[in-house]
Length: 270
Image 1 (cartoon, rainbow, N blue to C red):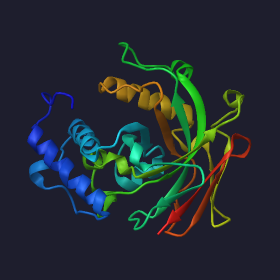
Image 2 (cartoon, helix red, strand yellow):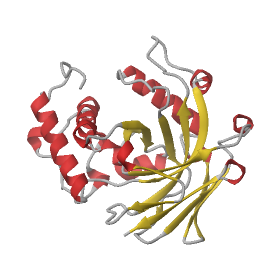
Image 3 (cartoon, rainbow, N blue to C red):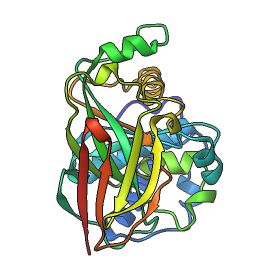
Image 4 (tube, rainbow, N blue to C red):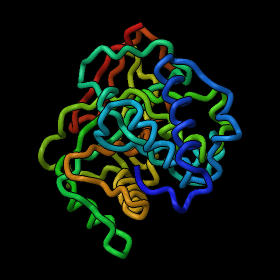
């Protein structure tokens, strides 16, 4: 864990919050809020707890997710900007997999563009431009995220607690890499459809992700670098939902259709 010198919380409080969140996650149950004695009061404290949750999970981190990448999403959970969360290796599934997704508290699925990094993007003293970040990308993938929260009412938990709770990360389904030539496609205007049990449940486009998934990737590259946890080669970054989250339940069949960029599907196993 990184030094906690700049935090009001001490390491004991950070670890206690992480224990509570990971036990709730493991048991598939929710809590009203973290106890006041270990409740984060800032994003820095939230990210310190998030790191400790990942360590306690015993699972490696395979990349990052971005939450609240639309104004509607930010308003829904009461935050004023995007939030970063870890993708745990134990929660990563491949195209067509059965995902043990019951019970689901949030009960939604999202269709997302995901980028696999080809090189590290450490802090270099100045913000990364979008072009610089994209030069560090190895591949584009299509993906489905099935987020969830460990809070009874995540809409009022506040940004520090949501960050501590890995920005509502849970299951993540990674599709195959998009065909060569994807860099010439306007991802902002590219249409996306999420089908549930063969029916179009939600439609959208890349513009729903901070205006463009590449903008979202640049945001997290800068946010992580400035916080001392830069994006690394081999990591996957899923950039936020292109569609209005679709209501799902155990037993559903999901398919995210990105047209010529590919499809990705999953089955929610009760």
